[in-house]
Amino acid sequence: MAAHTETQLLINNKLVSASDNATFDIISPYTGELVAKVPEATPTDVDTAVAAAEAAFPAWSSLSPVERGKPLKNMAELVLSERDELAKLDALAMGRPVSTYFDPNYAAPHFNYFAEAAYPQGHTSLNTPGFLNMSLRQPFGVVAIIIPWNAPLVFFSKKVAPAVAAGNCVVVKSSEKAPLTPWKLSTWIAKCGFPPGVINVLSGHGHIAGAALASHMRVRALSFTGSTRTGRAIQIASAQSNLKKVVFELGGKGPALVFEDADIDQAAIETENSINWNSGQTCMANSRIYVQESVKERFLQAFEKLARRRSMGDPMQKDVNHGPQADRTQFETVRKYIQLGKEVAKDTIDTSTEGEAGESKSLLVHPVIFTDVAEDSKVAKEEIFGPVVMINTFATESEAIQKANDTEFGLYAALYTKDLERAVRVGKKLESGMVGINCTSPTGCWDLPFGGWKGSGTGRESLLDSMEHYLEVKSLYIRAPGIGGIV
Ligand code: NAD
Image 1 (cartoon, rainbow, N blue to C red):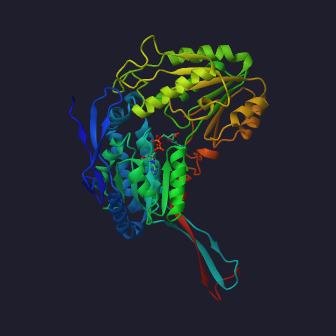
Image 2: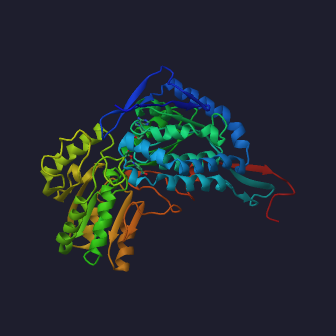
Image 3: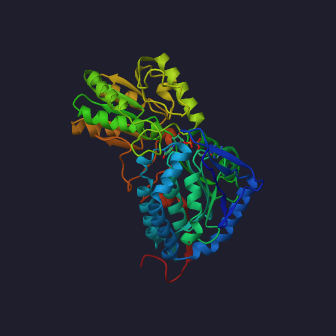
């Protein structure tokens, strides 16, 4: 068996063990071997990290934006130069194929952008006679950041960069399924020039360190990406503790509508990629596809052909684009939904070859296509987070919209048609934070709001929007007889 990695927590720029020395194991979802022993941060570690962040806050928030930006730029350089190492760590921990590792291309521009963009501004008002009034936008102090496992570097960068650029100090908790890239980043924090306590990075399970952060009285804001279930638990913990500000990017069950006038081949290529990329473990995947009845067979044939062409296997191999599910829990959950789907779908297309499914020691799941699935079934309603898609049909535009919106989620919806009027008409009616027209997820853009309606979240993140989450607003009323007033 290959040597495993031993990681640490980063508290106050010191790499340390958990306060009780407890660790948990990371097992490769492809080989089944031990990959790493990782500290299980305790509530005591959470307290120590929050205290370090609190102590660092006055000096850090007093620096100029240029000074705060310097270490962020150093981090941008490192994530690019160490790309291969980072890719390997996510492949080992959660089976993400190295061939699909785009994350540094996302993270570096985010670190660089916020290194230069932290010039928050308030308003001034002369509208009260005898007063010169103004609003200030100021950092919260200690911000907690809790991230999921499916793209750790992406979530680390999109939250940590704006939070610290705005002058906050942060405690990040990585996911128990993919703690290795956040740990690697934590080993670079001091080298990049972040003073002690500005960025603290903890590993551990949600119900321990995550829950301690969510209910911590000295954490004033919390940014979370993960499941809707956990978002609800954090909302409750916030309400029951200090009503900290919470920002949520949550789960999805995205619809894609394919009208009969669409470019069917393009729609098949893009929707197949959307649901099967990252082995179906993507929040914005179009897991529900609705095809107009007249083009169903053509679409289905094209889609199935593509799904069968996935290159499944060892995520460390450059020619593999479909790795295993992240861990045994994910694997079992997906397989449970596949069983359920067989009961509620008219037809099942399972792309695994005879005898293959279930026998390999790896946690690979071949793409599964369900057609004509009961709309009220769990498979149609719940997020599966695996390479499992339902393909149903519609006759009319209004039926398509009704089916697309019949969900508690609202992250990313897509529609394919050559009729531009219809595209805009339908796009406006879809209850979703993001809508792709003649494109689907993961297509997006970095400077428009990313986030969900309904159970898919409460926040909007982007280069232009994210900073808002990390700033409090204060109105300052200055009595100024002789100065205040419009004239
Ligand atoms: P998860 O909710 O199980 O875990 C996310 C994080 O929350 C982890 O770090 C976990 O340890 C922590 N956590 C768990 N319970 C907690 C608690 N009680 N208090 C505080 N923290 C707790 O989600 P996951 O399985 O890691 O990620 C998959 C989910 O994330 C899917 O639902 C997916 O759709 C969603 N997601 C959403 C987006 C988005 O931008 N909207 C992006 C990626 C993933």
